[in-house]
Length: 305
Image 1: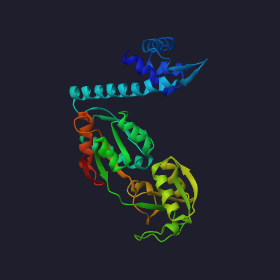
Image 2: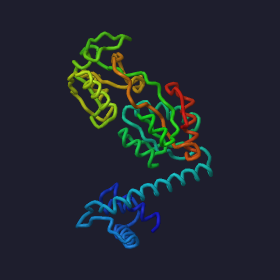
Image 3: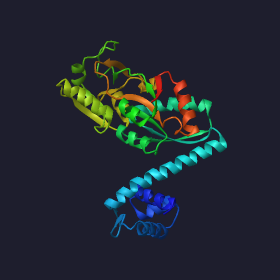
Image 4: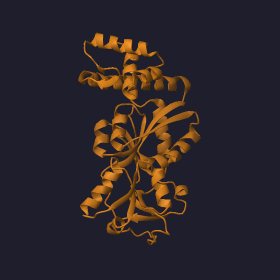
């Protein structure tokens, strides 16, 4: 068994097609199929359900695949670290981010790029649960999202926490002439309005749904989307009121939208930038973390617990 076979297996999982997996692996399809059959022969188990096309993995294949992901990720991390040692603070960072943080992420990258202009970024937008799995499985180097504090402590991540400034309602003044004030809007007032919300699989949406449910307030989500830009555009056009964590939408993107705080309980997860524990983070990742933490006023404190 060699690492290339594990890479082929991971590419097959991602592409779900032998031909596309071969292209992603830069080999011919017969070569990929032969190497995977050799892997099965060496391990003594069938890994792949084969018909005329790829039909998924066997139970044994799923278990081997989980090890393969880990081993490939560790190898990729090792390559990044060696590259950082050879060339200094340059290279490519794999960044995972939840949609609610994706807009403000650009400000983070701009601040760090002023200090380390040779860093490149590969950004993946995912749910909070997927993000935790990705940072724990080493498939991303830096994670921006919402995390439970106990989980961060148990996994010994380094975390820099965002200030929790609550939730704001963003709305078109002409369509929804609410009083724009620093006073918090009652949740009942917000529930009576058509809302533009993140899709139900997102942590922030689950938090909102729970707040309405606890208050026994029915509500209407006129727009649901994983795209923050789509939700903002819908609010601009007066279709509904967008709810978002305060500080996660750039002021320039409001473009005339009114903003009012909403009377809601705090989230049970904390917004944070997260990397591996000290000593496990590559020099590139550690330098990025330190620069981002020092540059951003929205980050209140950092821990390495």
